[in-house]
Length: 89
Image (cartoon, rainbow, N blue to C red):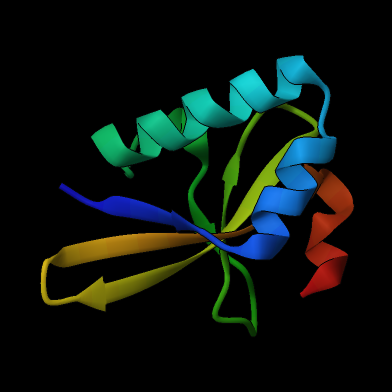
């Protein structure tokens, strides 16, 4: 089963979100860990970048980096925010 690690940037951005969006982000990460291919997540690689994204809701995204370590796959959560978060990469 994959695992997640939070970056400091993700943690700071997450804390600034409204509670309802934080809850939706937790649900999205839980779905990612259950089944990364779940269509509702819209997991996609960003063009010309090492980053991937998943959908929190219609307006928010989580940026992540897939990693490997000896214990299995890891998703490093890099940032979370409105859809224009893509401009940060």
